[in-house]
Image (cartoon, rainbow over all chains, first blue to last red; front, side):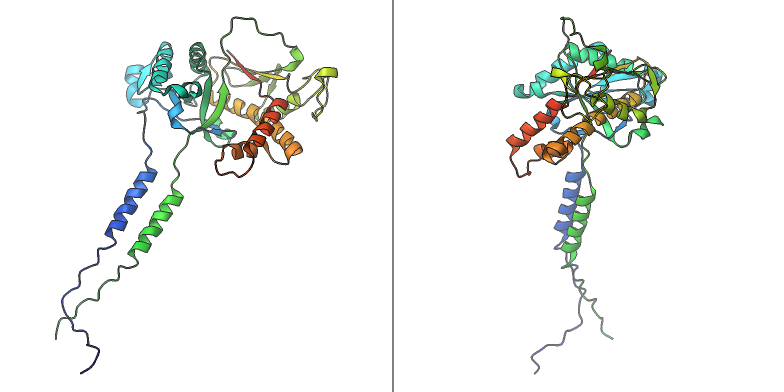
Length: 160
Length: 197
């Protein structure tokens, strides 16, 4: 009688699935981390210019976004190719900027209102006339903190 | 012959592989944070603007062909930073307007003091936004260059680093003192950049 039994050949052993939850959790975490909530659907082309003296624009709760640029291809038949403003997922006129700011202010917590910054996401090819109009409207409703949102990079990339 | 069973797959290291992947993705994924140039618009005022000496104003005009006209002379964007630094750091003033820390030429035809010097940026309606941002970027760079120099003279560190430290919650050090130092530099080289319509 030996103390150690020799292993008998038998049925197929089941594949150990104990680590399956780990894999699932890993995927879950990955997607949690990598997902950026998309706020607005862009109706315009929005190729931001480059700048290297930039500051970070964190604290999303105190930022309102104003987009401007040429309508993207599927809207060009309807809206033409002239640069336009986009507010909250739809095309808007310059005169609507003030109402937009008022509405944004109403939706934010009261103590944040003095810190509200307007992020201007303007396409590189847009002309300054439109941007100037937006700035003038913002001045009229006293939303003076603005941020020209850019990509981080050398400004030589702007010329092509 | 009897059936041989396949040896059991050792799954003990599966968790390790999973964590390895997890860490790889954690490290390589960057969440995009918006960056940009912060500006403050001037409030609409009814009162007349103060009278400023012509020599304290540095005019930069971008025309509709995206050409740069600096003090009525054509200039390439790459030369703008140097020209702006020279103007701001000129320190040509005397008496009360004298600038003790300027390293410029002290030309009496250029700015008196960095606190008096104003850069006036004009554009036409047809100017492209990308060019405008390039110019803004260069002007901000000129200010940052001077502020960095001043910070390294006074406190042995750069202004950019000081601001980063001030915003960093994990930074160990005296934040009130740092704030005062930042304010001091901003006082020496105030960012007076006016955007005219």
